[in-house]
Image (cartoon, rainbow, N blue to C red; front, side, top):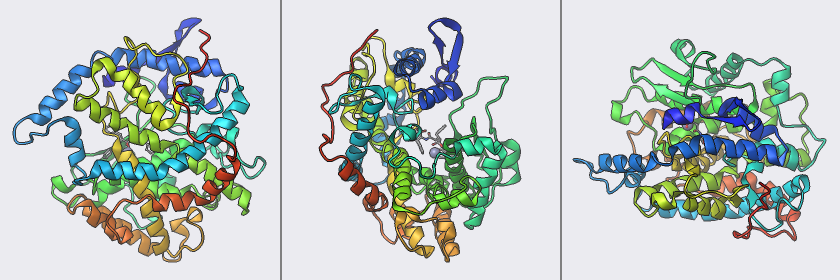
Length: 490
Ligand SMILES: O=C(CCC(O)(O)[C@H](Cc1ccccc1)NC(=O)c1ccccc1)N[C@@H](Cc1ccccc1)C(=O)O
Ligand SMILES: [Zn+2]
């Protein structure tokens, strides 16, 4: 399944020998095209090339995985139960649902605003004012991050552009400079620097001579010195953020390497995903981007603030329903309540219910397997960890901002700019050094002083934007009529 995913290509209708790889061709198509039908080709072509090939393999995989976790001393009732056990939280699913319910108003306000803007771009015949959004129009192959359509939704055009990709490319940024920039930030915050073998042994760019798994990953060789990233880096802001994400994994490896192997894990899997994103919250601030030469002039006024918060919301708020639903689907597959006969229709029920999106073309239940078109399904990588990460990274950010001595609104905080940045770095290092030797509430307490997941910090961070969106959305229908479908001209 990994090989099918990593080598899949979508071939042009009019030239079957001209085939597009996911990275970078289809990524660029979904990010840059503003042609409804071209976007549909890229969206459908990837699912035909990969999802359809995986449809009949996945049921057997589920069976084998459930057998494996039911064996011997483990005796988990199914794979989902085993995966949830890593959080050591009896009411874990209830806590997640509670967090999600608190975040729904943020998402619905962003969704309503983006839907209105997309109607203006693609026409009222293509998008309903009260329905779900066609999935291929959101700038991302899985509609999980909407940052690439920032130009279509920018609140105050003409203010400083936050899209630093053009400047990265114009200034000749290299992949090495992107990784060095990230390493410099970790060092500046008092964390451990990347060892020489990281630079010697990592794969930073897509090789020209062989097929590789391009989906980014960070590897611990459990020998206290060999740590590596594998990534097909492109010169853009998205990948600069991903580099921080991957380096966050490496940082955890380096900080907990003194523990026995069973403790060389994150406090919980969400913590491992949160480290790099946490630091990237500071790097992404306009003043920090200016400091590393990616923004020329920064305007400090309310309109620029709203533009900045919109760009952050298109990355962080848009992700929340996707991060939540991926394992809602998978846990149900593992426990048998979703069967191979209903894989795809149950997938789209969840996608429409939580994300407020619909497929641009009818799905064929006998052939289509759209979950298979997302890396983590064939890759068998659990996903709720990212939803947990998106919640806790804002709890950590708020706490480290206070420790660093930041004053003012949370969204303007760069922990490396605070007078007590060293104290903030020490708290982070102490948490990382615990690995999984303490249960995660104890690790959380080291940074935040309390032991529970909370949606309050992410809501506080985005509050100015929420207020602005509520005004903009006056008269709009929040949420969507799940029965609407786009017109299909074949
Ligand atoms: O998948 C990733 C990043 C890759 C990874 O760093 O999480 C990677 C996934 C992976 C790859 C191969 C085998 C297993 C997992 N995870 C790691 O490299 C990893 C995982 C656990 C511990 C240490 C490293 N991000 C998710 C979600 C996300 C996260 C942050 C921003 C945007 C989107 C996505 O792209 O959908
Ligand atoms: Zn990760």
